[in-house]
Every structure is written in C-alpha cells, then in structure tokens.
Length: 91
Image (cartoon, rainbow, N blue to C red; front, side, top):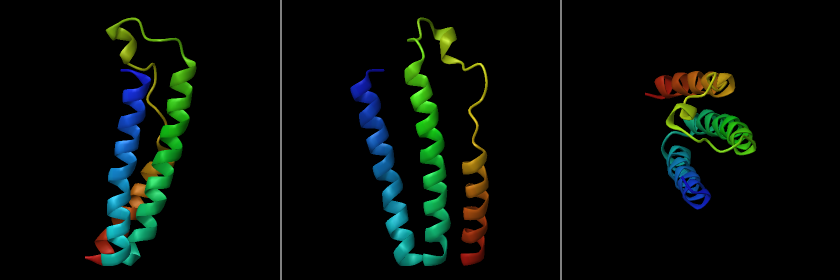
C-alpha cells in the first residue's frame, strides 16, 4: 500500500469516528465523553504502532504481514469497556 493511500485511509477513518462523537454529544451526552476517551485511546495506540511500523524495513513477502506479536491495546480495551457501560446505562 502506498503512503498516500495509507494517509487517505487514516483520514477517512478519523472522519468516520468524528460523526458518532458529534451525534452522541447531541443525542446521548452521557456517552459522548466515554466515546471520546475511546477514540483518543485508540488513536494514541494506533499512532504508536503506525510510527513503529514505518521505522521497520519494508515487507518483502506475504509472510511478513503477520506481526511477531499482537499490538498492545490495553488502553483502548479499557476505554471500550467504559464506553460500553455508558451506552448500557443510557439505554
């Protein structure tokens, strides 16, 4: 995947995450902050992983697509749990 295409896809994803945030602020304000925290945690973790990936040499074969270890997602997993609880409480 080219850098331009990667950048476009990240931009598209960020735009898709912005709509629910605005909608939640209007329709379910009690969920808006937990959702914003989830997005922030996910962006932070993804940013670290993407930065690390760019520092690695380019992948030369399909086998290189499988990372040696799973990416850490502790912060986003915890934020997702809190967001899910906020949604349940708001139903």
